[in-house]
Length: 73
Image (cartoon, rainbow, N blue to C red):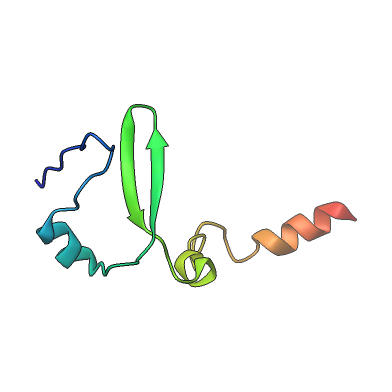
């Protein structure tokens, strides 16, 4: 597990093994997510459309949309 220290200017250095694993380059953007007392740093996708494509695949059955539309009538 990599470790980082917060500097007096509230900056952190991302450890080399993390930069290599995520293929981070200078100037890359990170998303900072705070969830309760947990901090997550995520690489910002170049395209949110591509990053989220297919997330709901398989969540609904084949007939779900037909049944839903029929219920509107």
